[in-house]
Image 1 (cartoon, helix red, strand yellow):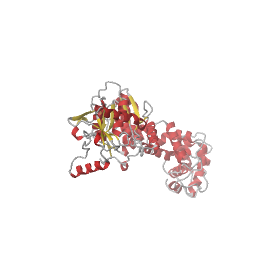
Image 2 (cartoon, rainbow, N blue to C red):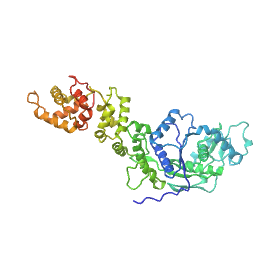
Image 3 (cartoon, rainbow, N blue to C red):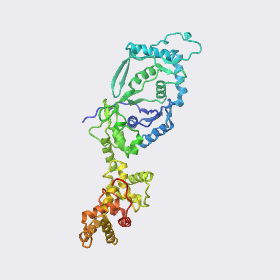
Image 4 (cartoon, one colour):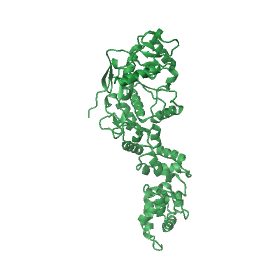
Amino acid sequence: MTSPPPIAVNQPPVTRFAPSPTGYLHIGSARTALFNWLFARHHGGRFLLRIEDTDRERSTAEAVRAILDGMEWLGLDADEPPIYQFARAGRHAAAAHRLLAEGRAYRCYASPDELEAMRARQRAAGEPVRYDGRWRDRDPGEAPAGAPFTVRLRAEQSGETVIEDLVQGVIRVANAQLDDMVLLRADGTPTYMLAVVVDDHEMAISHVIRGSDHLTNTFRQAQLYRAFGWSIPQFAHIPLIHGADGAKLSKRHGALGVEAYRDQGILPEALCNYLLRLGWSHGDEEIIGRDRAIAWFDLAAVGRSPARFDMNKLLSVNAHYLRQSEHTRLADEVLQRLTATSADSLSGHARERLIRGMPGLKERAKTLVELTAAARFYALAAPITIGKAAADLLTPSALACLAELANSLAGHADWTAAELERAVRSFADSYGAGAEVAMGFRQIAQALRAALTGAVVSPPIFEVMAVLGRDETLARLRPPPLPPVAAAGN
């Protein structure tokens, strides 16, 4: 498959991610941040972070922390400390007053009731709902003394605004469709449109990469750039993410905050890999690590159609990264989760066992949650909790057999999986002559698994014995007459 030609970048770009701290770091926002970060890194540019916290009623410190934590977890480091938009309100207001002084903006004294009546008439007549310019050329002296006013942009009314979008192509809109937007509210506070343009200009943003739902904003912001006489950045509007059914992505599709995916046991590199492939491609490559992503990423390969989020695909990608992860890292992840959630006492040898047992564990897990559940028995000290299904296998005759097996194994010096299997098979061949209930090798192995892991499914049982070691194995094979039983599960 031939890759599209790269987009020419004449100088190192400056990109930004500008989330509003009114909730969690949404999965779509995380992809936007990733694309901005990769574009800057690919071209040797800079990536900046701006917290757009001008909505004081909805912005929260918790949401800011969630955004910063999510960015750190994903490894999307900014090249400067984050900028907080609200702290720059004075700069925004000063810029609006400059346009007012130059005649590129004007005071609008229309009251909220007047504006609502205007919109009602437009809706009734089937007309587009937009400001009708009633104060655009009117003498401010006609306004009542002390009347509140907003400051509006004196927008271009003829011609068209053209955006040469790096993803969507050339897009045009007639200026007659764009009304005179508000720059300063009646209380003197700047609007989002004004703040974004002023901030992007003063931060020297060269490329604005964001979702296609911002296209309407872009036409208005382009007019504002022209009013200021500033260079307009290059825009790239990436397609939105939809659910597998083609509908707008929502929580029912798995659209959660980044922290929720972390809690579900998704690795950050897996999530970044998956998000990268939502709307961007490089031939048939599916698994793309960070270094290759930086080397390959460019906007020319971003498609125009909405991408579809598939949780099963994400889990498949995550399973790949689990298998590739270092055993020590996974052991530490498991220990951290067990320490936070387990009521059982962990063994002082937990980390050592988890590292030794990780090869047999990580091949079977798709998430860290699954891995933690499967690895839990390695981290515990005897006696362990026995699941109900496993407890059903530990009949009195099975417990008697295991106790005898423990005595048989106690003197073995070679505690390796191969030697342990040989010893158990030999024990099974001879066991039963004097027992009330005969047990073959398969039945003994099932009982071994139940007693050693507390479950009926585990890595190969002789591998488990080797990882646990002689003392822990024998301690678990000589349990109390009634081992602790979990209320449900394996």
